[in-house]
Image (tube, rainbow, N blue to C red; front, side, top):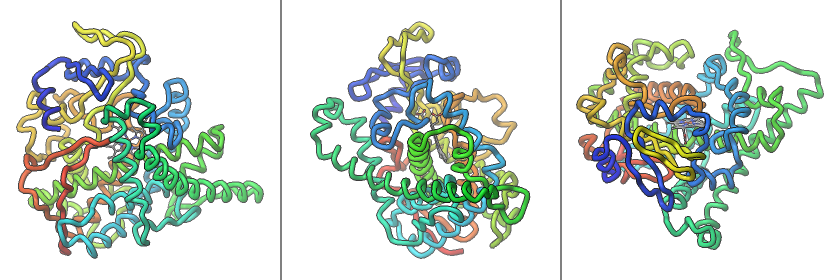
Length: 445
Ligand code: HEM
């Protein structure tokens, strides 16, 4: 990853690179990215990144072509409204409480597989988001023994291997490889889990419809109605059952890995900077106290905690870059990216660039105070991508990470073996991960 960042530094405008067998144009200037990222003929993802995911899990909004994407994105966007997200804070609390218990019992040594624990937590969150545990399937991934985190981990390793291994760009070699068989086995296990969630929900829905019952759960008897995403989609999206499954598979996958990697990086940063950890602790104690669950209206008050999440995502964005397929020639200043190539927007480079950030490797959450953000170009920070095809779950992600961090910090002290950000190396799989693991361990407060 260091070599990649060095190349970006040497070419301040645009650089041609090979990603496997794919020619890509990496665009370095925020003003150029801003002009390109929302262009109607540049909204398709590059197939070399996502075609395997589409093949194994279904062609949902993460991967699908612009014409289908436009319709599905509009329908799905309603499920990510602030009101719906607010009603899910109780689920984020439940999962965060279990996560703290898992850490307290197991993470007393640096070899603890934090990422696997984070996968279980976020997978349970995402499945509940679609089906609501009170009405659907209780997965209990954090409290029972299961190998789903390991299965997902292996599938994602193999996704990365398929993208970055040159010989696998030959469909013939890939088709006959052992890795293809392995990834199909993992995908079928993951599909089976999601099928359970969707089937249970479809049964509930059918029963309700027969009984003419149209009521839903209420959150703590308050005015917020917890209408889960599947309810909304079943009611009036017009999605076929197959389309519904495809969307759920892709969104749950998109939510789980990214969230787990982010939690791992945030806790690593907390281990590196105990004085910042103390400030988070003080804020959580002041806003919520030692034991109370976090209410939806507490979340906006956890301002410092949220800035810590943002700063961790600046230094460790889950996707080092995002890519778009060039359908027809594109002019970028003095350069032309021909049709059939790929445009790359380098998130990690932008986040760590000395041109845009003072002392970029310093962990400073106050960079995200409104007064410090005013003069910064928005495309110098885009961990959730940017524009119309950005991450549909970014608000969900910010809320779930803020709630989780608050729960962890008020009960546990976080430590890491690392001494500085400079020492932490990242490596590129399908997503960016910390090489050698975060080496995080905890002690009860
Ligand atoms: C910290 C956590 C997360 C990060 C850093 C993240 C980041 C991103 C990025 C960079 C993209 C653009 C990918 C591309 O253009 O190739 C994206 C897309 C997407 N994300 Fe996230 N994501 C996170 C969490 C979530 C969550 C929680 C959900 C759903 C609950 C979600 C659902 C999606 C979907 C469906 C897309 C595709 C959107 C589209 O193409 O219209 N993500 N995410």
